[in-house]
Length: 262
Image (tube, rainbow, N blue to C red; front, side, top):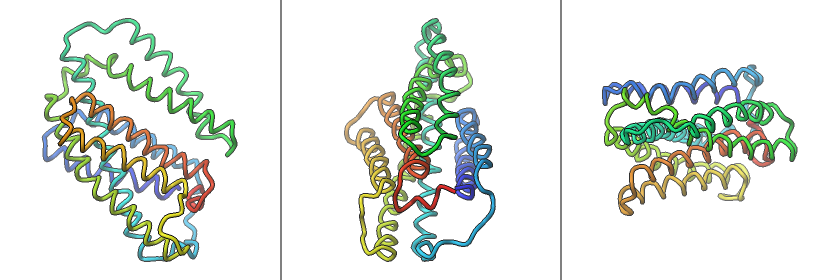
């Protein structure tokens, strides 16, 4: 897991810098780089030694499957940063003072988020830790909700909403077919290694859930004509599902991807 936690931030940062150069927008980095910094710091709690691949992983399918997966992770992370920035800007444009209830909610959720996050990320693989994880994910969603209001003053420095929405849409539009390809390639690899294209492995199931969330986002933005704020929250929810797919499944669910826990 150490190698992937180091590769993912670098890939995501490369994509972000490209978008920053393309759109001349730097403010999204305030919502993006804390995620990158956390991943790099957290990676060092895992075994940093590089060991030989197990036989099931010695396949050309693996290389393109993993690369496609992480390209999808990176693009969805950029979309998440742009979507949170959009929600902050959207609240800023309402031109109303920050209500004290949002500040209190922000502080309380942050205080609770830290210990539950620690217990989730360092706990044993048991039911107690899974419950802690569910509470942590719930607190994370609540924290993001309150943060979009508390950070309203930051909206002054953010670009216009339609540009943030466009960046999110293009990031998802780029990542979604790559993520789709990664699922298909993973199926081909699974068939070669285990004789089955789909085994309802926890990783496969959560990858499909992530796919459904971002498929709903694309549908809502292109056909459903959802409001940008609604679409942005779908991206946030999809990113939470992505975190569960990447971390939760690897760390806490037994399955064919359990080799990624070290």
